[in-house]
Length: 116
Image 1 (cartoon, rainbow, N blue to C red):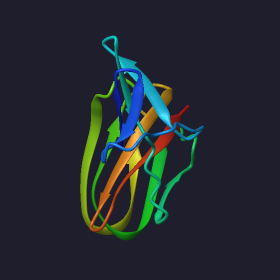
Image 2: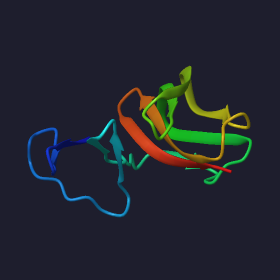
Image 3: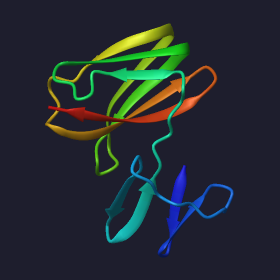
C-alpha cells in the first residue's frame, strides 16, 4: 500500500515510492490519496473488462471479496469462506474502473477491474 504525504508518495515503511503504469492514483476532497495495485501472483480476476460476471480464482481459500469504486466507497462485499474461486454478479454496476479487494487465508490483494 502506498500513501501520499504532501506531494510525495511513500510505502507503509516510509520508503519513497515511485508510481508506475499499474498504479491507480486519485485525489479525494482536494487531498491526494494513492493506492498501489497489489498484485498477488496467485490471484486471477477475469474477464477484464467484465459485463455480467467477474470470476476470481486463487491458490488459497478466499475469505472476503470487496468491490470499491473510484471514490473509495465499498459498493459490494461478499464473504466467501472455504472456496478457492467465486464469481460476482456485476451486471448492476455502472461502467467504469473499480478496485477488487481479495482477502485470502494468506494474502491481501487489490486488482483493478473494468466493468463495461
